[in-house]
Amino acid sequence: MKRIVLFLLILSVLFGMGGTLFAGGEKESKGDPDLAVGIVLPTKDEPRWLQDEARFREALDKAGYSVEILFSQGDPARERANVEALLSKGIKVLIICPHDGAAAAAAADEAKRSGASVISYDRLITGTANVDYYVTFDSITVGEQFGQYLVDNAKGKNNNLYLYAGAATDNNAFLFFEGAWNILQPRIADGTFVIRNSSEAVALSGKQDLTREEMGKIIGQVTTNWDFNVAKNLAEANLTSVGPDAKGDVFIAAPNDGTARAIADAFAADPDVTQYYISGQDAEKASIQYIIDGKQSMTVFKDVRTLVKDAISAAVAILEEKKPLAYGVYDNGATDVLAIQSEVITVTQDNLKEVLIDSGYYKASDFTGL
Image 1 (cartoon, helix red, strand yellow):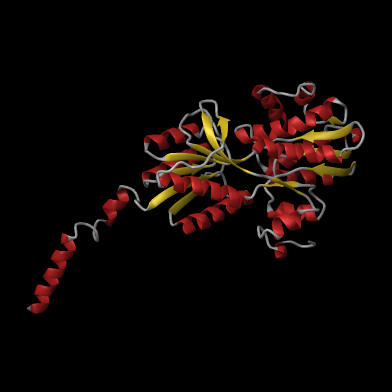
Image 2 (tube, rainbow, N blue to C red):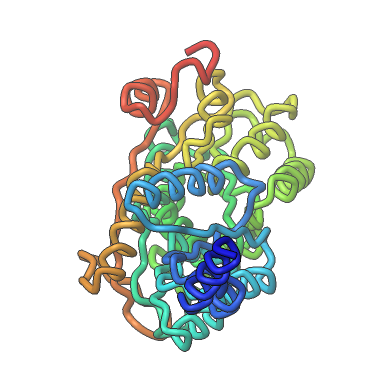
């Protein structure tokens, strides 16, 4: 009898706790109150974004906040669905690296309607005022480092120059190209370089400051769409369409490491190419090995640790109802977005050990021939 009374007493206490023990299903349907930050990254197919994912998880864990990270695989519709899924779980801060900056505006608008703050990460969301902060590397400086490396290694006149760009849907592709053009155009105009793979670039070669529409015309001819296969096929097509006089020693402005490796492989396979200098960015492990092996000339190191730290610091400040420190401004076509910018470093064979190994970013054991 005592046991029955005790059992009934326990049941009455448990049900009397209101739902703290039994309301789990109801609580989940209203969103996860412990999920503070939602992150949407563009693809799992590039090592760069897997690095970012790992750094985000580590940093947010240390900061004491829960996070869910989703990948959109280069699909704006999936990106929007990912954002909606995170908002349904009650996130307070959305960090999103858009595949298509213009298409992502609708997701930013929806986040704002849901009461979430929006941090545009690495790539700028355009065409909406509903972006709170832009955490980025100085993308124009990245492009300028591409161009400067090629200029520094060019001798004499009529050096063969091949231009490549990222996706026309990515605002960063325009910024990278703008930076490279800032440095290369004067050397194109004075005859140091001869453009071999873009009639639009040739037509505009006398103009230093290009409009976005003018850059778009060039990028339309030389876009890799951030895709390795597209880059390789385009490079092979470019080489097939020109004669031996457009080969020999060549200078290649490649927009990132993944496309640089694909383009480099195409140029290396052409018997009429005697030597090439090629740019890149992101300091991906595979490209660092390419640099060690002499198959890629340089990369622009964008320390993901710093970028993630800046994004997390901004998110935590927002969660704590403070204002993140932002010193830059980017016009996204609808508003001036406050920007938090991280520095970038040119990496070659000469300094890669100091910049990447000695700093602890990578381990020497990750590479051969170092």
